[in-house]
Length: 340
Image 1 (cartoon, one colour):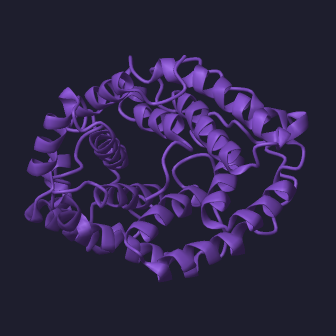
Image 2 (image 1 turned 60 degrees about the horizontal axis):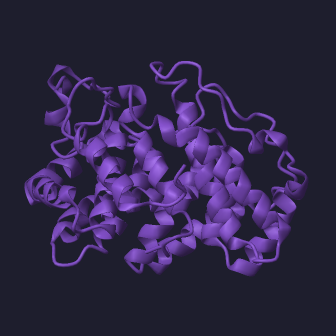
């Protein structure tokens, strides 16, 4: 089982994503109808991100394509990716996506998961040289960054579920955008919010994992959020309190890959993503531990078990195929590249 991103895997991931970012149906829109005039097709609502079964999966599949293009610009898929971006990242299409957000019915649209992925995509585009895709997408990215600025001061409590509503995931991904755009005020807001929500968390039991439709570990994504946002020394102290017994493989649920009984069921198929998401977090956390720390070996071994459980299942049924490759890429690259 591969444990790093190879050119062959990158090409495979890109082919999977290219196969569905332009596939409009089946589609699960997150759309509020204020009247009959709002009954429109996905492509009419979202001229860029209308494929991949739902808007957020389309966005993070574009991130996957951008990442592959940057890492492996000479692959056969690279030309197709660039042509797709040229066709889709245009001022008129970005304006249409922005106009959708301006409607009063969209205040909670894709909060915070889709917000986070759009900013993650925008951060990746800043690293692609010689193109204007980043500048073209910038108005949409700024609209979502402003949503974070408006929402976080109002969010008294975090959301700790293992699905799209998890707030730690939102903070973690938005941090890459704040760094890429050198937005120090946003970075400070993200860090202060993480401390307000999570600084006092100790001895995480993780007894609720996994729930039947989790694709994130609420415990591990919180740890990964804090790793990303805190200074290394501060994170080390926090992490030792948050998961104090990982040398003893406690809590045990975090070390056992989830079992997936039916990959044609979209919710049950989330559990393949949970395995890949845990692999991502465990690998990133392992990389943050000192080389002689015994927890580093424990975390690395846990990551490899989860990666082995999830990686063979990124394609085959559309319920998983439209999104799982993204989380496989996160897992394979964890710790391999610096953040933007």
